[in-house]
Image 1 (cartoon, helix red, strand yellow):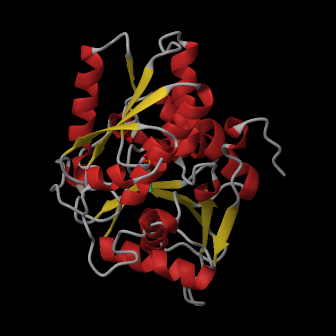
Image 2 (cartoon, protein in one colour; image 1 turned 90 degrees about the vertical axis):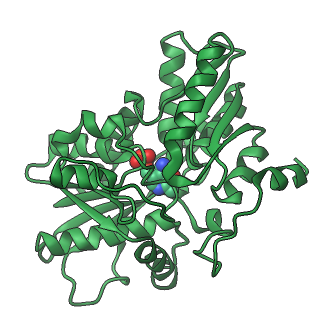
Length: 335
Ligand code: PMP
């Protein structure tokens, strides 16, 4: 049982759960999933946000009074906003304006400010460029965090998530995760490849935007496209993925429809309120097990990165995605 002297100490040490009811009885391999939505701000991103801030402070580059500038498509922004509150930093979130409203509302609850960039999930590169530019113009005031390149993102998962998986269930036969920054995938992969001979590591991406999957399979980036799996498939190949490409054995793609249907099935069959990328990860785990003909007792591990309540305004709940004006939503908030 956790006893925390502050929110930072409550990050990590998440449960791992076997998902046995979303697959037919004839499906013999075991699907295991790390319940990352049980982190304090409700997503996997608490781990790396804390590591990135800690490393920047240890290097002496992030100083009291500076503002944390965070390009993000959502969960990273929520984690940084919460940590900014507890550690005493202002936070400026640079975010595509079409991300789900729940995300902005949570960030505002923690007191963050916003800079909106055009587009949705697969336009994260624009937010990254603008955040970089803003910080370069104000180097004494702004501290820029590049989650797609920062090694502390990988370290967080190597030192915590990957180690926890080994402590909880030992060596799995395979591990797969959708790529946002690739930090979760590569940090865990690095740990598993060190400890587990023959573990199969696969990346996953939205089938509508298979940029890294295309590169892995053909050497050329796949086509860019819009999709609905928030938090992953950012529309470019992150530096972290290139840095650790030698750890990858395979790549799987999952459509937005498959991801949404699986997220609903996980709620209905397993009683777990997960987000859309969790559905995508579980579909990817099943596909990987089938492709590699895994057998009875073989464990495939994946991640449940966040929870369903972050998606009330998306197609997980609604027939059609409603893209309201984010600025209007923020103006109406009484916080
Ligand atoms: N799912 C969701 C909902 C996320 O917010 C993220 C983080 N962007 C991921 C998956 C992927 O994690 P990572 O950035 O470590 O690849």
